[in-house]
Image 1 (tube, one colour):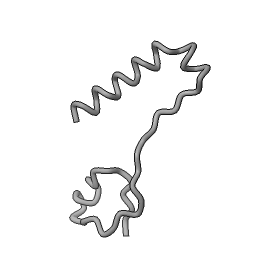
Image 2 (spheres, rainbow, N blue to C red):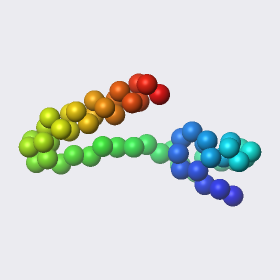
Image 3 (cartoon, helix red, strand yellow):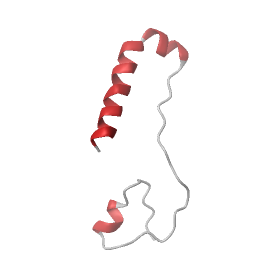
Length: 58
């Protein structure tokens, strides 16, 4: 068996395999501590905007 840890399952399909079972659902999280958010606010917000834009283009 192959465990594919991404949502698309592309690796499975590229190898002529198909999903057998979902082990656990996964999701990504962006974690920022309070001090970093206070002192690097502009950089963090710019990064989150880029991430949101990339998701929207998907």
